[in-house]
Image 1 (cartoon, rainbow over the protein chains, first blue to last red):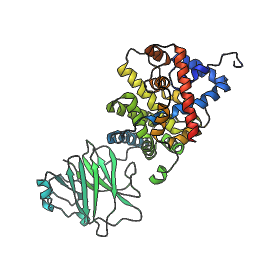
Image 2 (cartoon, rainbow over the protein chains, first blue to last red):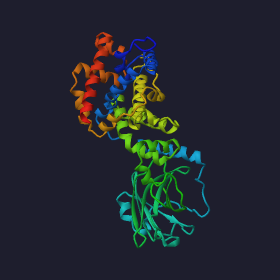
Image 3 (spheres, helix red, strand yellow):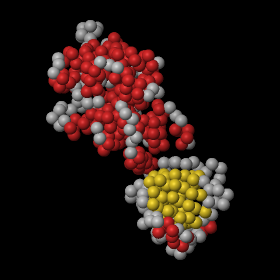
Image 4 (cartoon, rainbow over the protein chains, first blue to last red):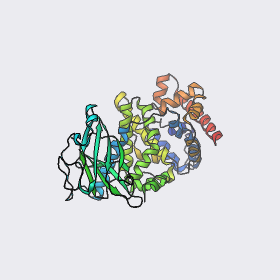
Length: 224
Length: 191
């Protein structure tokens, strides 16, 4: 009995811990627990047995899509709280996607791999391969996956990285980050390209994997 | 704070950042508990698509409900999995057992139902393998493990279990209690 004269619902505590009481019973036990240290202690002792039950189930790898979709929503929420950053700045010019025949990936095209030019600055045209600042590159797409190869990129300062982003025109999500060798060359696997991606962008950032870009967009590759 | 530093934070510190809408902290939280959450949802919901929906709903509710976690009420992992379990049971009842009364699960109830003391044993067992915990459950007499699994993973109330198994309600309660007490003893041995 408690101070108020209630009977201790000892038999219900296990069902309570398992979430197996009917709503009215659950409320009654919860009310009782507020005033009864003995039952609270008993429940405290039992509950770890319930808490480990999830560990008994076979562990299943979640689909990659789950995290990707979650993070897309989360980043959009965070951006709307902080104000939109994603406005086009002067000087970002993208070029029309076309097969990268001119830079010798025709063999890949024959093999069924599509290539897209990457542009930098505002001098690029459909025919140019070497772009402003001597940087050039190609984004090789194979189905839903892609690899970026660049050369002529500027050396990075300190721990800076080049960060790749998937953009659907109004939203971005980070892809992989990369650094370049002494010749400014690098190859970066983008992995699976999210559906709806319109462009792949490159920025220089102080660290990899930021939730949203802080650096200028240096390169962009439209996906046709 | 740099990404690597955030990823090294304790769960409770991550939750403080999640409450302040830090996507990097949320991503770290998902990376730590997303697998267990999805696995639990998969076990309860029974198919990958439903498990994905449940896990997504649960994590978005965590992201969007400010200050939902109270560190005085237990571990972040148990809190996350409690939310997943409740949402999975609700989905199961909604989709598979439309005639069964809703048990009115909500995320806040996960907090309210938990006593405000630490849960050291759970943190110890967290490092143990699923096989060991599964073994502890399998070691129970089948009549005890059955009522526990029907309640926790099936979302059935004790009265529903009594009706299903054609046994008195008091017997169901007794088996739940005996089973949990034995499980509790096993956990203590793992310390």
